[in-house]
Image 1 (tube, one colour):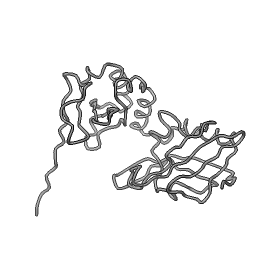
Image 2 (cartoon, rainbow, N blue to C red):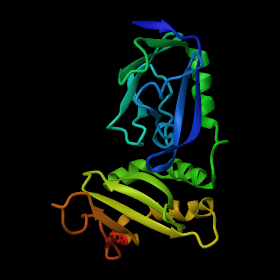
Image 3 (cartoon, rainbow, N blue to C red):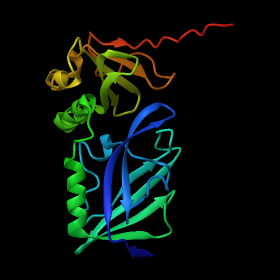
Image 4 (cartoon, rainbow, N blue to C red):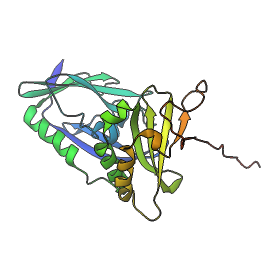
Length: 241
């Protein structure tokens, strides 16, 4: 069953969760915020709005993640929405941890305008957010995919703000791959051109580090070059007494 909702509005908000500070895309239907009523926390704009605005409605129905667990993980909490355009309306059908017992229908012109507005709204961004958006939208994802890589995220290292890090994953999901760029007084936006230039070169030439995602995987990935080194994660000691 689907009811006519009347209005839809999106907003990007900065929130705190179990892992620290996070970003979420909130969804308001008739001025009621729906992601908190679903899985609990809206999806990050990085992935939902960039590099592609997945809220855009097409005649081909598609299922889009819209909310995740309040811990920040999509998987232990899930709310999806099926978005489909039909004539002069756009339909939303809630899936999994649903915030309502019925879907919603919106005027297509109003929906299109709001989806376009949130996709173009960067007023919420800090320097590191702008840098991540520019990298996500500036990288050649098809070329990376052909090289067996997918970009996961790009931002300063949480416990080392002097270093900007790009994290990729091999398409076979066997490895994470890391590129680091020193900030040295620069802002994250200042390293965007350098990062994108590096991502346009063959991966074998990168000064990358890697980490297997399973203990059963040993050695570097097949795309690794001579400069690649395995990531060393040091276990922090805790003081007793």
